[in-house]
Length: 68
Image 1 (cartoon, one colour):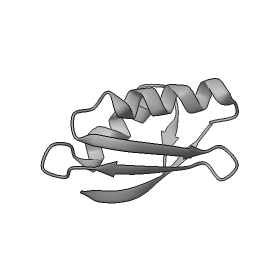
Image 2 (cartoon, one colour):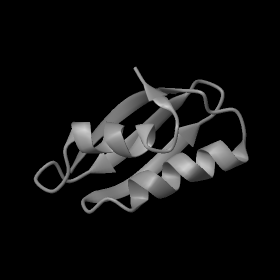
Image 3 (cartoon, one colour):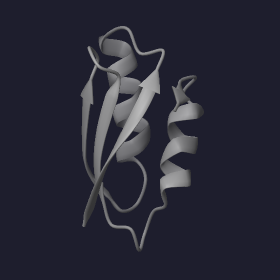
């Protein structure tokens, strides 16, 4: 398992947090997601053999948020 932090812009409320968490948790290989609305950081624990960083970024961007 590996942990990475994504810098996500555009999240402002609880709904934003739930959207990002839900999108990432649906990906096979993602085991844990922690969203910090104050900093815009999303900490993701995942199995790098099952899901890529690009796939995670794409999932967040599909929800309407930008990943730095």
